[in-house]
Length: 540
Image 1 (cartoon, rainbow, N blue to C red):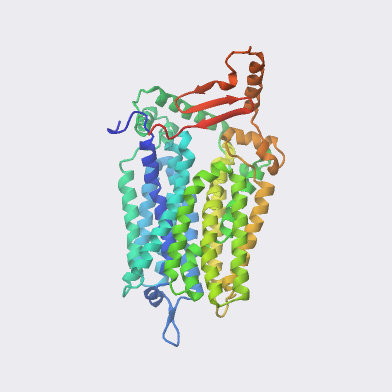
Image 2 (tube, one colour; image 1 turned 120 degrees about the horizontal axis):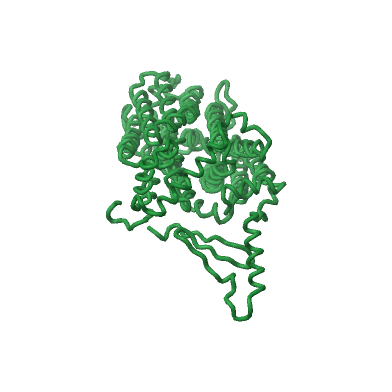
């Protein structure tokens, strides 16, 4: 055990989970980096075209290429490295992703032409895709069950922090002479990868990985280190037994093909459509338009301090993911997501309408800036986090891994399409749609459609175990009725409590006043039902 921590402390698990989230910073930093780099004059002079008046600009085709090729790499990396993580382990899979990432960064630094730079962007995307798919898996497998949601959701928070850091660095280097203006932010990407490689060389492997291959002794050592307990501790043994039982269930299921994800039994096809559509709408609301092209777009709109505005939107984006960790449990996934989509719809329509009736005016520019920041705040809290949580918990055990992969593949695919098409939609000039701020009509309409879809299709799963979510989808016919669902075992236990309370004599201890507790949670039994009150942070 580590000195300085009490036995059974949650801090080792939290520290490991937080360190793994650096992979999210790496992902977010690259996303935010390109937004500023595209607007830098030295970058335009290196890869752009000179106009007759002597100024330089980056054609829509190159902007589209440099941004969208990263999404293509993300898609390939996420789908290609799952096998490596299963065969060689989560740690080695993450280290491999970091090495690929660094190779892509080196290609961008050395690039003398647009083709090599784009190739580097693809390789960076491949490495990032590997890290972003294995990282949350590793977090989930090492986290105690009562704080698993917070630790894995922290990966999304880390991504927004990475975008913010990139905006700060871009703003600091944009006025430098020569190529160092955009090369310094690219060089900094090496730092995140080196930190991850160094850390994963010492962190424990996932106990579930060892158990999968029958290495129980190694799994016991790793789990004892993560939980900060002795190897022969009863709780360590109990958790290993749970992992073993879960693996036996998976083995009894047998091999699952992608075809099984499209079957109707157990509402599997319904849930797959749900997951893929939720992830599609998370892209179609246009958030990555601001993250990828925001600085350049604000610049074209006549806003002189576009780098500062971009930095402000990223600061708001990061800040709003923090209260989202609380609100998603307080409001529920379904309600929170509907609120997020409606807020996104209203703010984006205001931007588009004002831009249409007062184009080029100071009023339009002020509205563009203020409501873009408000929109980012709403999306970062009410769209991104609940979408990821829904996809992570909606699928049955048998098809969960492949269904999540298909949903994330849909996310990356739409990311690619939007990154590819947006410059042609927004920019002026031959072959472009020249929509400008009118593009917010598209994002706003998609937000409204997203709210309607969630109301009709998405079930509320707040407070339910994964097994209870299966029961929910198989017993409640319509999504809008899901909030009143009570799991079968809770109904049975509640009936028993009511009967015992009726049998009590005056002056007896009422069963509803009895508190039952174990090492991890306290359960309060009442006549209205059974409410589990988690106390996950009490053992730091």
